[in-house]
Image (cartoon, rainbow, N blue to C red; front, side):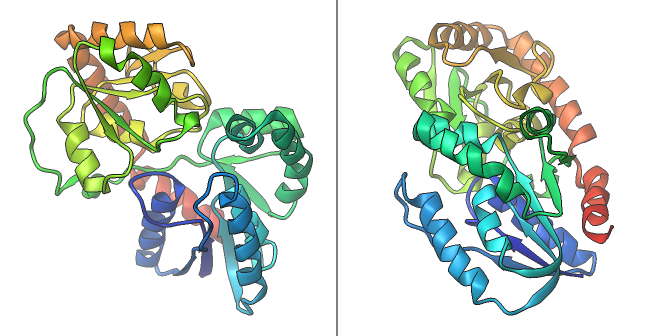
Length: 314
């Protein structure tokens, strides 16, 4: 099949773009012809998505090719997908988009997005998400049916991550330096943590994984989320996780089993949990081993690639 992927980027340490890129490689091995379309944008907070949509629409209008499938990997990418000729159009959503806009911009802007969101979803023949929470929320909010397909974790990516001695009392954050990720909450309590905090916000993926693997605890204090790839990476590297109970996080972080959950925007609880886990090596080991078993059982390419093939071929 001839398939076009659209995403703001296909590189980086995390996010949907690198997942789409890895999937494109797997599908190519299955015999599909995959084309990647990324679009330049203005790297300024309030102009990023708008510029992507405008430049992307122009790029879409100038593309005269016809595809079997076009797959837009986030909501702004749908503005390009709309103008692409294809037998089937797929839109993937990661998190409640209007909630993300409210968080990053304003309630007014979020409400404007909500009013247009349903119209944009109409442009797709199939809607997918990697979170059962998002699936349920869009059903309640807009009456929309989403197919649930998790993003796999590829163990082969970690082959070149060297064996590294654990830095006891080292805490690590891996993610964007942005408000919705709650990095400011971690920085607020940093001076009171009984350890050293490492921030991996713009490092190459391999370097970030080396620091993650060497850490005693991984922390993700997000305000909004879908199912974060960084948590799955921590699971695979057997680093115990503390994360906020937002979005689809609870689908993977099962409290006191695969990690520790805390309330969002609660810096005192975050501080308590970090210091508690730093002083309990037995609990660290239990959480890490449970999480590794969970990730290898439920998020392998062997389990999930057939679902993607069915998505494109049906």
